[in-house]
Amino acid sequence: MIVTEKKPINEIIENLERANAKSVHLFGCDTCAQQCKTGGEVELKEMTTLLTDKGFEVTGTSLVDETCYTQLAKREFRQKEELKGADAVLVLACGAGVKCVADSAEETQPILPALNSMFLTSVERVGKFYEGCSLCGNCVLADTGGICPHTDCPKSLLNGPCGGVDNGKCEVYTENDCAWVRIYDRLKEQGRLDIMTEFVPPKDHSVQGKPHKVLLR
Amino acid sequence: MSEDVNLLKEELDAGRFTITAEICPPRGTDVSAFIDKARLLKGKITAANVTDNQRAVMRLSSLACSVILKQEGLEPVLQMTCRDRNRIAIQSDLLGGAALGIKNILALTGDHVSFGDHKESKPVFDLDAVQLVHTVKTLNEGKNLNGKELRGETDYYIGAAVNPGSVPLEPEWLRFKKKINAGAEFFQTQAIYDMERFKKFFDDAEKLDVKILGGILLLKSAKMAEYLNKNVPGVDVPQSYIDELENSDEPLKTGIDIASRQLRELMGFCHGAHIMAISQEESVPQIIDGA
Image (cartoon, rainbow over all chains, first blue to last red; front, side):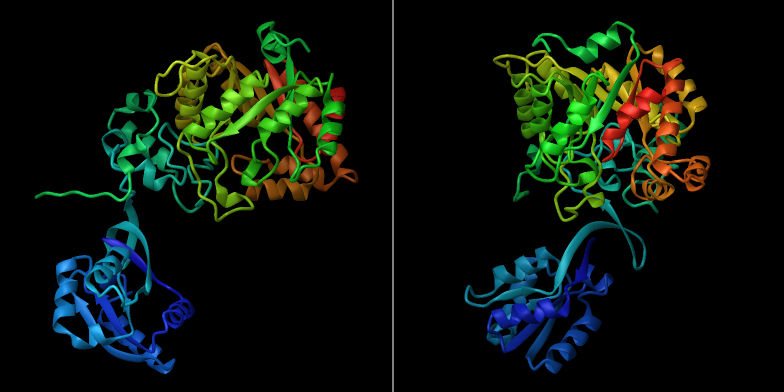
């Protein structure tokens, strides 16, 4: 799941004004943004009230199961005249959702983001999100006891902890346990500390070439 | 200073107690105070470390300042972190340093940008400190990281850092050994506060055939000690020193005295000492004379 956060309302209004938008259609997402309380039914209503109060005409709202699925966004554009007719569309979804809506709209219609996309999360329970994966394209979890040094270490170190470990805590986020101390403890429990004596060569970032694509057919 | 002699390596190899100190480059292009400090330290220490945007605060480049030190006749140790450059820039700067006559390198991970004055910048960390040591070794062997032959190799004396006071010590110890296996020949430690604990670390480390320079950090006041404890990673000044500084009429003098005592202790068993007198480099000669 992708975690999103709301942009400040002033930024959203500024973006609408720069797009010369008097009328706006709101486009939410009923999966990730709904769970993050940033783009579900409740937030669409809140945004409608906020923008109406600021003098904008909200022509309507759309809420699809997954806004990051272009076919679903396109269907909304086929079915809703008020979506096509709005001066701009404000998307309450992650960046991938904004892209799908933008790809579904006419070239002339401005599509604006209402959210910032933050990270790919592991969901501890409803409303508790911890970054789960950095999408590095070269998973190292086999050698790190299932704890990701790319994600949990702010420096993404691959060969053990930095010198800033303070009583097992991270120097950057002092409330966090050092990822490498956790890796050490877990590998020790598993009797596999020999892994931590092996040199890990520099990461191959060529697999990180943007923009990525996978075509299964 | 002869072009071919590496004073730091020579002293350590000869088994003489070797003192290094760090000098911080200026924030700007005016190097006059930096040169003054270099002249003050010349003859008092064997080599001077030039910090690389220490604590992620932007300053004049460590490579440029290392060259200035060399021109002043003081042997430089070029500090290089992984925070601000990817592997292309790092290798390029390493070749540059070698071409300009720099002979010593201290390979560091680097403090995170969140500690510095450009918190919005991208932390690079394309390499980590172990991989950086490996990179220097590779260039010393005449190849780049992708195995391509160099037209002229580097000849760095490779140093790295270790924190003997790390809690827990075991993961740090494993990484220390990784750095040695990757090619590190000498170590400058983080500031030492528990000499008994350090001695034990040293006894174990000595068996691994590397040179260790124990870190001494000059404390200027109780307030500074408390600030360091709170804000500088890897620093943990004990309360007894803070009290000593607190109760002193001349805290800087007391700080110099503490540093001299530490230096004297290190002279008894260690290969050398590395003095970190943050923005107070002019006190380094007094620390040495006091010991």
